[in-house]
Image (tube, rainbow, N blue to C red; front, side, top):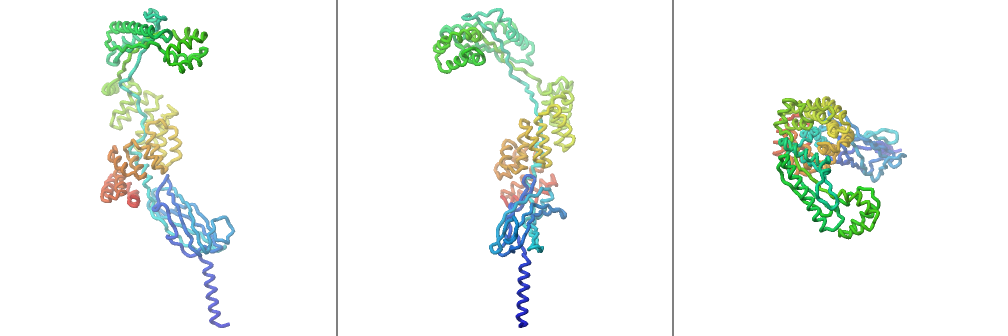
Length: 558
């Protein structure tokens, strides 16, 4: 055989062997990563990989397993879920990639977030075989860095502090004392037997108490409501009810004079008490009850009503015996206020003998105190005096959480739940602790038991930030002016709202300045962003772990 021909055939054979045994390199151009840069969401770093195998890349007997990796720190690697692809002659259940046409694919990855991942690179690695032979496909770097803005909730939530169980102290409370006087049919005189009933005795006693303790009791007025039962003509009942009003008013004036109490009298009467009649019938067990109620709804004219009811002879006899006598009456009502201790009096009593204060007065006293140590002392005294009330225990736990003493806080939360197994603020604070550790499921479970607790919306808002539900989080913080509200609005891209909220943040701190830097960067104001960033890092250098990538993200998404 011709020597040149032999060499040519050998070269062709080598070329064919080489081309059949290699897959070649892939480049970053073959992949789109969403989002890019990567971003935390719900304690994870999720990524969607949209890839493409080029035409004539995937050999017919090839299999390629693609594994996402996030490399961070000093040689640390987090691996995502692998996905395998196969050539058209491979027997298997993986996605088939045609040799001539190539193919597109999508795969998902999610890495458990740790702060060190902010400085990281995402790679795709390949485990490739043609038949049984392993072939080398070089890894490809596809993304750099992780944006951790959403993870800032662990820092923003401490600005507002843990959940305080509120007191229910009210210095002034509106009260009523009511007496009921009944009359005989068609009469308006006050019977001595009626003036000796318990409600009248308590009425007179209250007037005496008001006169004796004007510092703690303040009368507003006495109201008189006189009635006639609805049977009989309107004209007669109108005069009768008026007489009952006048008689009752005379009695009240005499009692006010006797007890030396001065106040206004608001007297009025109702000629035919159909409303009271309907209420009593509704609450009764009399025969023909439903028929009587239907008559009341069908007929609006008083005479027609009375006639229709009288036509039910048995039913009317029951009404005459059980219902109508109760409507021939006057109601005598003292409207007054109880006046509790003033702030100064509460503080003086606490200094003299705190045991003389109610639990709500003590909790209120703590709310007046601005010094955290003194506030805690009051809560501890309250817990000592009122062991069955969970609020003081919970509030000590909240103050300990605000100081960063989680172990001590947990001990007081245990005491709070021992005092009241349903204590909502205690569960809200347990959820608060869960969120500080990124324990989202545990936080949700505890928060489900805290629905009526003070501060519930704040913790729920932070949980929604952690889960990536930014619109819901912004709704929860709609009435708040704190760092978490600003963060939620920034993540929800409502920059106008965030700008307004950040101006009203109480107790602004380093995180407030840092959020301001992100907000300015997203709005394209890099000069102010750098100023606020410098201010933030001077107050809290730990924010440096967030700074570069977060601000880079802000600029990319402004």
